[in-house]
Amino acid sequence: MTPLGTAPLDTAVLDGLNRILPIDSVRTDPAYCWAYSYDNSRRQGLPAVVVMPDNHDQVEQIVRLCNRHKLPVTARGLGTGTAGAAVPEHGGLVLCTEKMRACHIDPDNRVAVVQPGVTNGTVQREAAKHGFFWAPDPTSAEYSTVGGNLACNASGPRAVKYGTPRENTLGMLAVTGDGVRVKSGCYTTKGVVGYDLTRLLIGSEGTLAVTTEATLKLTPLPEGIRALRILFSSATAAARGVSRIMAQNVVPRVVEFIDADCLQLIREYSSTDISLEAKAMLIIEVDGPLAQLDHAVNAIENAVKDPALLECRGARNDEETKQLWLSRKALSPALRTIAPKKINEDVVVPVSRLGEFVTTLQTLSKEYGVHIVAFGHAGNGNLHVNLLVDPDDPVQMAQAKPCLAAIFNLVISFGGTLSGEHGIGFEKKEFVGLEIEPATLELMVRIKRQFDPNNILNPGKLFPAASLAG
Image (tube, helix red, strand yellow):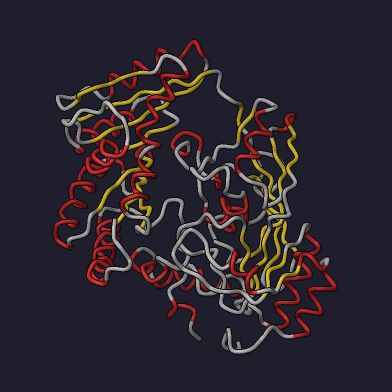
């Protein structure tokens, strides 16, 4: 492949794109392309062209054209990812799905058929009109697209009860790197014909195929939801509470954990009544039939009983629920205020080791001189570990890299995984070998070559550079 950025876009490619798409759907102005050069990571790569198809046939033709000319293709939605997966190759093509926003709800079969550019929030609103929801609910739901959710298997807090996109997607329509139409899965909730390509494509970060349609499994909306705020005097006590919650027969829909440093930030940057004695907080939600909610709340209250328990406060109505969540919602703005360019990693460890993991993070924080805070979806053991560094400070950044490596090694030593929902992208790809054995990684590389023989689909992502050599 010709080194990227060393030559202007091939005239034959541009002419081909203009034959496939209307003129306003092919953009080469660098000022326009710049808006598609980055995601929610700090990385950037200026594409030579941005195209905006609105149907499967156009995508198929675009990918075939790019494959013939070996032009890198990065499919993207609205760029909310944090791992750099949506950052294009410099001089490549961005295939933006923002015009592919069709969303059809089939309530009789509890299914939604959507294009990849529709936002998660739109799917939720359309499904709710018929009494349903789609289980994945990332924090960025109003801005993140279904295509992006599928690419990273992004789920959010409800995954503890309802699962991730892999458990809530029945089938997909996609285009491989050599422009071949692939249809996976089925329209029914049961089906076992052939390999499960749907689950393979989900989480592949656009390296295997470009998704053009997805069939989503919907779930009935619950009759009611109840929330609890639980405070502990130690992180280990909170972790014990999470383990006991997840061991009893009432499965909560949300189990959020916030560590001591995060609580202090909330106190400093918002109005809150969280006591200074509190060193960890859980926010729990249970849902289901109204007649069962009191029982569910009692089950949670019994599960978290502990000498270190400081408070277990339940919300009795929507307004009280809103108040309970205010402290959690104050956290992200506080973090952006003190460290607007923080390093945000999402890792997963076994629920039983959450307390030990959070305690060891503080040891690493002192060892490397890097301020570390942790919060996230404790019911799955999925924590967002934030390194509050200033990238303009060379001393801090010199310490951040070995600190991050130490965190990832710690995660693997605990039997965890490097990402729960943000994906690998560019940021974590050189650490993948910590988790995936060489023979398994080689098999994945061979699968990538079958789907994308010329390595045009989102190259430079997901795999360590050395694994794709040769």
